[in-house]
Image (cartoon, rainbow, N blue to C red; front, side, top):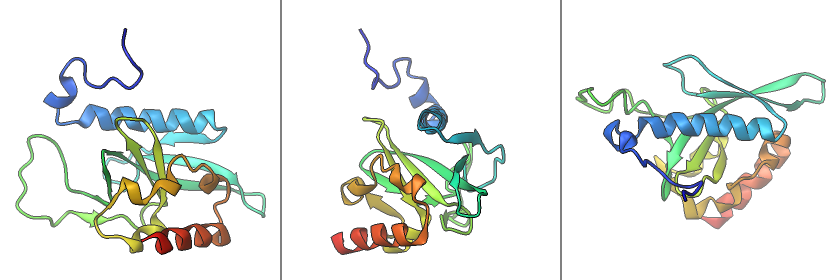
Length: 168
């Protein structure tokens, strides 16, 4: 009998350089967000810095907020850059298209642990604490931390960022 955490029983994911796993994790994230009571949809902009849009909790003025989310498959660390891969048949001359995510282009990165299906909820306003990636072991307080989505406000995020910064 199979397990929920089984990966690539057909060999297709390896054959396609992991791309189907990324697609699966985007669907997984959207499903989890809906299960949590949030509206979530796919961003159909192939060149954008985010994959999913979440309609979050209402602001004090009664308007809903839209959060742009980049979904990343992770193993032992979370990559904080984008633009580095464009397909299996693409040639790379330099890292010209590689960029680090920021609040200007993305609100959150959701790192999906490919082995356990935990979701690391990382606000891009925290990325100035780290380089191009961060070890999973250093961001444990962000694992399945749905409070970030419910408390998307400056005081809460600052307090959380300070905790992460002091743990470094």
